[in-house]
Image 1 (cartoon, rainbow, N blue to C red):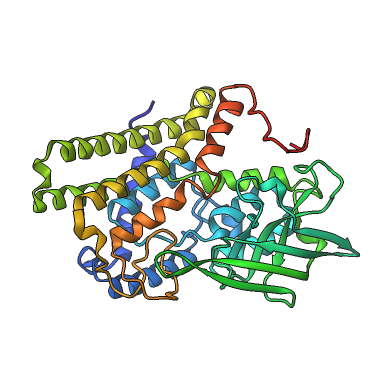
Image 2: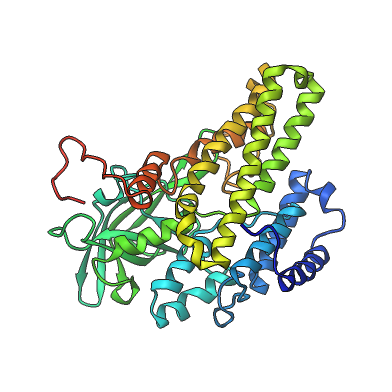
Length: 415
């Protein structure tokens, strides 16, 4: 495991550190504590990242990105985390579709769709889950039927983030009902602004609308907007979900450590820091954060040294499960530190901007930042594949254990 970066990468770190400092307001540390001021700065920051190509730093220069190497991108993430820079909203185009198109897309698809994503001109949402097809995604029922040079789409997607503002949706639809369920699915790019698509917001526990239902009734997209080949959508989608499950290998721990330090201060203020059980829980949380930090270095080492990649497959596969379960444990600890006061809603009427960033408020629900973080942490072990599904993947595909027996009533050979 490498614990230091090559000299040229450290030189890049100093360069990018100076650039970030020149872009953020000098009083950012103080102003970020004011939700209104922080929101205005974050909006301008996000626009600047799109304008300069830093919204997608690893994408090739020809599509508007910065052409960074993996290690340079890690350093970029570390430096952003170090100064607590505004978090770029995790949009579907930048995080999920773009990397998928870079791998599976045609030249025409890359030329058409990647530059508008980099520069923030088009917003994308993801249409995978359905009311009866969540973790068991292969049971999806939305259909796409080829008619001439178009696909006609009918069906129902759910838990679709940003659908209310999206220009396009990348989605899965069944194109061959007679094929085994994993093999009759295609990956399509569909314009949202057309007749036959209806978006219905879903109110979340904290009163905000971050998810949506999307209904398709004879919606259409060009046949050229199919990615990866007809009936080959399952393999393409698994790559997309791999990007969703990923996280910044060596920077995510910094966010949790900041939260942990705030909890230590709260424990000292309230006097609970002297309680043995609470001290033990704080120590355990600190240890878990350090494990996350070291595991990040191990993953980056595998990138630098492909010859040891096989040794880190299980580690990389388990990263998403580890951090999402730890996030729940950490927010549980935070509410326990608040004691009975943690049950009192003392936040403002505006969403505090956790999880997927600022979301429209439907029903004012004055949850504080920690309370909203607690609510959002519940979703981590579900999105991108549930923790149970992830353990099956690790056991079967990484450790080579026997496959889990099919559930009672499932079709033999359906997988």
